[in-house]
Image (cartoon, rainbow, N blue to C red; front, side, top):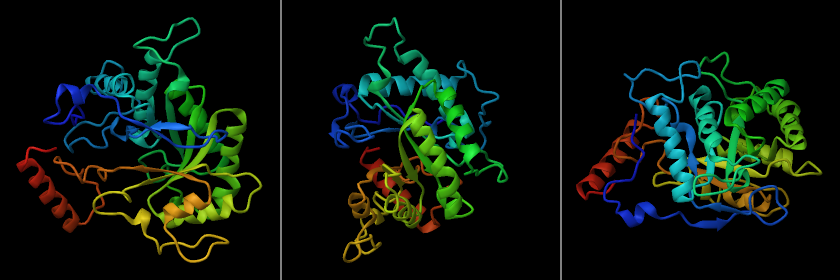
Amino acid sequence: MRNFGPSRGADAETIGKKVPRRKYASHGSRLPCELPSLGLGCSSFSTFFASDDEAPLTVDNMSRGHAAVKGWVETIRHAILHRGITLLDTAPWYGHGTSEITIGYALSDLLVHEDDAVGESRIHRSSIVTNTKVGRYEADPKLQFDFTYDATMNSVQRSLRRCCCRYFDVIQIHDPEFATSLSELIDETIPALVECRRKGWCKAIGITGYPLAVQHELLVSCNMNSDDTVFDQSLVYCHNNLHDMSLYDDQAFLWPNEMGRMSFAECCQKGNVKLMAAAPLSMGLLTCSGPPSWHPASQALRQACASAAQLCESQEVD
């Protein structure tokens, strides 16, 4: 498993610092008013980023006593208690359940119960932000995607049990570009998530996926044609880093009732949809270890990033 501990050259003062917090949403919003400037992406609590010769960890063979799982739980504890990284982003797709279960292991120890006192090692649920997703699930292509109403409702309830939470702060539609049609999302997935929000299983609804055009289409179709805002948040990934800044391409999209073209970031601002940018290291591409074998980057981009990593290593920078 990869080591996600302190980077080389980090001194004791740096290791002990908490990340700064920033304003996120306005009061009265369904989203948190404030967030840490850095969140903990939980896809690595799986064997997705393991070497090819490592045995996969699954929901059937994982346990709290497994060495990797113990390390993941400690990572969550350290991030929340010592670094102030109180935003956890997970999904049923991450490890096909292992990520959510790992979060559940950590939160079952961290969260205070009715008679517990808050202290250095226990916190209230309201002190953290936990987001998950629906729509993408298993490795088997036949079982990988399901955006139907029933599957969405069942998924949210399963995720709540796995994560040991009574509610999620945000539930996002995961990779909607793989839905059979836009109509399926509008007629099945979104009504299910609105019902989850009504039941108190989540506070807000979001969307995440790689193609910005698909997110744009959904935002226009739903948020502009509804009496109540459907989507509160957009999570994008790999569009806000050293080799791809297309999140800010100011000629990319049109927005209803607005003159001229604008970037996806500007569209979100016009639609009162809060942005969150994930994968700043491009799913391992911008690291000294390099990306996993399944990474979709071209060979030319892989080589350019490897050269940059070598330059960093020559300067003793991670």
